[in-house]
Each structure stands twice: as structure tokens, then as C-alpha cells.
Image (cartoon, rainbow over all chains, first blue to last red; front, side):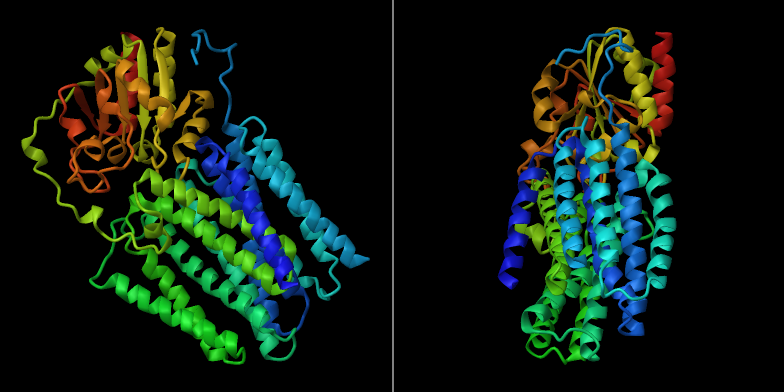
Length: 101
Length: 463
């Protein structure tokens, strides 16, 4: 089981590396906020800790973890969306000058 | 059945996350892609909520609501100029979640109410809390520096690297001890505390200008901590997301350190030292500086046919991005061509300038990376530098004795004329004299960037 998990880890790392190398510097800030939002997936661990009722310590710690992770998910996806909404191409209709490229 | 549904939701989430990240390679598809990733997150959460281990939903519901209440303003109301500290803070939150899950797992196992801990699981838990708590405090310090609660200048003391190395060694020994015998709880908690201390000590000596590397590096650590959580819990979606996150942060910190001409091992161990930052400020007062009035600068800009704008952190501080766009539109209306040159480490985080300019409605196809635009400076009539310093310092190219020698820069000094908007003659973050400001083709327009730009706008209108 451990080795299966190692495979997953390494392969996901490769996929991430391949995909992210192609992200242009233009979008590096949204990339960071996006990975931040995605890292909020630690919520799935926090949910089990907060809800499995094994010990009150674990429940409290789990509760705080749920708050932290949810904050990142909600805040992270919202701010990423807000940023990406701002990136616009040059609209030829509103510009009189031609743009050599 | 339930277990299969959960796993299915995780597979879906993993696919959507990867597609979402891939969409970021194309600015026009990115928004849609990230919305899909958000849907993936929703799947994963719902898939987890049906987990049979969860018996009590009250704390969960409270946590979700509270998190959403805190998260909403952090997503919608934080100004784009404050993005770097916003990201640093959320890295701290993310890492804290990992640490808390790790500690609660350990606590349960120790008190015989959780699954027993084998060696592999203990190793995963150990790495998780070690990396996690280091990131929590490191990111908090980075937040403090970026928010200017803490001094941005590096705080150093003699023997710092040796002390940090020793502390790290002790933390590592504690980790090994706990892995060998998981019942050594005092070693476990001492390790958590020590790692938190290490996070502070690692980031405190780093100057504000190096923050892009630090934030990217902490992003990577945060991801690795999440992946370790996945190993500890046997949860594949955590491993996948953590790995993606780790790879992204790793890659960005490599890119950033290249852009600052620092070796990667230098970055990996956080040993940024004080070399560049303690360099003496040259005898700047003795060198000639040509100040220019806004009227004269406006005339140069109004009659230029090729203009390149070089924004730096000064533009972000003055929140002058809207005035920049206004000025650029005026020049374009008069028939000039305006491009923006973005240095990879301009600002306080990777890509910060691009977001600021996009917010001000600058079309993204006008924003050029360093390599794309460097060849165009010799044909440029006016290069307008707004609050950038070290990234346009020709000493990086010419002066072997300079602490920033070898750092790739924007070749602004090759433009026909240069106008620099700057508050005063203070040296940049690295504290290095910039010969560009004394070059014959350069004129300085002193004052707050926003005020200067507003003046330029009205003068160009009148010209």
C-alpha cells in the first residue's frame, strides 16, 4: 500500500511539473492562489478528525483545521476567480491604434 | 458502496484539479477551468462527508460556516496590492490545517482511540507536522514582513546559519526518535515546537525583495505537508493535491531564484545570507542626477512613437496602476505604441505586476516578459521606469564587483531616453547604487508615483 501511495505521489508530481511549466509568468499569481485553494483539500482530513468523535482533543483540533481549510478553499477560489476575471485581451473595437505583434 | 462513492468523488476531483491547473496555461480559458476545479473540490468534500467514520456533524457544520465567513472577505475584499501577504497568510492557514490533523491523529493513536501507528505511518505523520509547523510560522513571518508589521530589512545575528542548522538537526533527530518509538510523545511535541521556531528563524533573516522566492518555497512546503497528510491517512486525493501544490511551489521558487541569480541549493535551505543586503551604499550623492519636470517629461512621452513602461514595486505601493493605464491610452491615442516590460521578480510575488495591470484594464497581450522584450529597448524612444530599481540596474550586467552581478535585468539603459519615476534618491531594497539613474540618457521625475503620473496625464492631454 505504501508503495502504491509513493507511485501516486511521484506521478502526480510529474503531472504537476509538466502542466505548471507551461503556465506563463503572466498568470503566476493566479497559479499561486489556485494551488492555495486546491491545498484546501486538506479539509477532507480535517472533516474526519472533527467528526469521528474519537477524543475531544481531536475534535477541537479537527474543528480548527476545518475552519482553516475552508477559509482557504472559499477565499482561494474566490480570489483566483476575481483575478482571472480581470485578465482581458485587447479589444480591437475600442482601440483606434493598430497593435503590431 | 459508500467507500466506492467517496473514492469516485476523489478521482473526479483529481481530474478536475489537473484540468483546472492546465487551463492556467491559457488566459482566456483559465477562469472557466478554475471554476471546474472548484466543482471538483465540492465533489471531494461531499464524498468525504458520507464517510462512515464521521458520526457527529455539529463541529463540522460550525467549522464550514465559520471558514466560509472568514474566507469570503479574504477572497473578495483584499486589494490586489495586498495579494502577496494574502497568499502568505493562506499558506499559514493551509499548513496549520495539516499540522492539526497530524497532531490529532497522533493524539488519538497515542491514547488508543485511533488506528495504531506503524513505522511508515509515523514517518508520514512526523514529516507532516515538521514541514507543516515550519510553514505555519514561516508564512506568518513572511506575512508580517509583507504587511510591514515586521521590518522588511533582514534581521541577522552572527552564526545564524549554524544555529539554524543545529536546530534543524535536533528536529530531525527527534523525528527519527519518534519514528523508532511512536510512544515518545514528548519528543513528538518538542519537534512540533522546534519546527515552529525554525520557521521563524528561517524567514526572519530574509529581506523584503527576496519574498517572491520565500513565498513560492513556503507554497511548496505547504503542499508537501498536505501530501504527507495523505500518506498518514492513506488518502490519495490528499497525496495528489499535495504533490501538485508542492511541484508548483518548487517550480516557481526555481524560476524566481533564477531570476534573482541565486543558486537553488541556496534557496532550498533558506540560507539567503545577508551578502547582497549588507553591501555598502556607494557615494551616490557625488554623481550627477538630471531631474526633469512633469511638463518636459510629458512632452517627451507625447511625441514618442515607441514607449516601454517598466513597473516595479513602487507602482504597487503608490497604487498607481490606473494612472499608468490612463497615460498609456493617451500616448496610444496620439499614435505612439506602448508596451509593458515585466521582470519576473518585479513586485513581491511571482506575477504580481501582471495582476495589478490587469486590474487597471491593461490588455494582457501588452504585457511582455523580460526575454520577449529585452531586444526592443534599443529601438525604444522612451522607457518609463515606475518605482523599479534593482531589476533595471545595469551593474548586474557590467559590474563584476556588484552583489547583484549576473542577475538578469531589463535592459532599460539601452533605450534612447529613460524617464525614472522615483520618490527620492534612496537605494533599492538591495541597497546598491544604480548607475542607470546617473546615465546621460536618464532623467529623474521625483515624487509619489501616483501624483507624478496624474501630472503627466494632464500634461500629455494639453500637449
